[in-house]
Amino acid sequence: MLGKLHLLIVMTLLFSTTAYSNLVDTVRLIKPSVVGIGIYTPIGQPQNQLFGSGFVIGDGSYIVTNSHVVVKELDDSLLQKLAVFIGKGQAAKVKLATLIASDKEHDIAILKIEGQPLPALALAKSDFRPEGSEIAFTGFPIGSVLGLYPATHRGIIAAVTPTIIPVNDARQISIAMLKQLRDPYLVYQLDATAYPGNSGSAMYDVKTGEVIGIINKVFVQQSKEAAISKPSGITYAIPVKYLHKLLKQHNIKG
Image 1 (cartoon, rainbow, N blue to C red):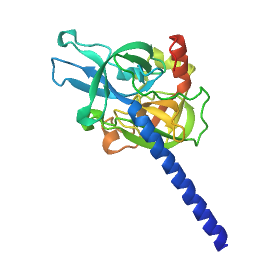
Image 2 (spheres, rainbow, N blue to C red; image 1 turned 90 degrees about the vertical axis):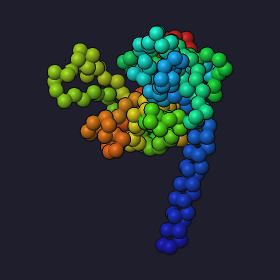
Image 3 (cartoon, rainbow, N blue to C red; image 1 turned 120 degrees about the horizontal axis):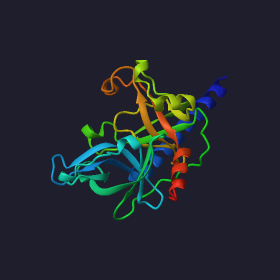
C-alpha cells in the first residue's frame, strides 16, 4: 500500500512540475506579443491612455482586441490617435493604429499598426476546446492604474455556454438583446477571474501557446469597482472560431 501511495505522490509531483514548467516557457513566449490598447494624445495630458489589452497575429502588423475596447470617437483638436502600446512599464512605446475590421456581435476588433512588425501568436483551429482544458491569459489587469506590466492568470474552461447579458429590469432589454436571446452563440466560461483592463487579452493553451479565445467580460455580483476588491465574478472568453471568421471576411491571414 505504501509503495502505491509513494508512486502516486511521485506521479502527481511530476505532473505538477511539468505543467508549471510548460506555463513558464509558454508565458515567456507569449509576453512579447501582448500589447495595450488605448489612445495617444500628443498635445494633451495624459498623452497615453490605456483602455484594454490585445495581442499580435498574422504578419506581426495585426492586433486583436475587443470591439468595446477601441475608442470610437477621437478628439481631432487634440490630434488624438488610436494607439497600441508595446514594451513594459516606463519603457513603453507607442505605435499608431488603424481599425480595419470589427465584429460587434462577437465583440472582436482587428487593428493594423504602423512600422516594424511585432512577434505574432499562433491561432488554434476553430474547434471548441472541451471543458476542463487548461488555459491561461496574459494582459493588463487594471492597467490604467498599474501601468504596462503584463500579468498572467491561469485556470480551466469551466463551461461552454450560450452568451447571455443579464439585466436587473425588463425595461433595460434592447432589441439587440432580444435577438441574441433567440439565437445565442457559445462562449467559454472560465474559473479564472479577469479584471478591468483584461478585456482583449489572448486566452491560450498552457502547453502550446495557441490562442483559443479572447477575454471578453466579467459578470460581477456587485458593482464593476467591486471586481477589484472582491473578485467574485465569472469570466467569459470569445472562442477563436469567430476571429477566424472575421479574418476570412477581410482576407487577413491569421
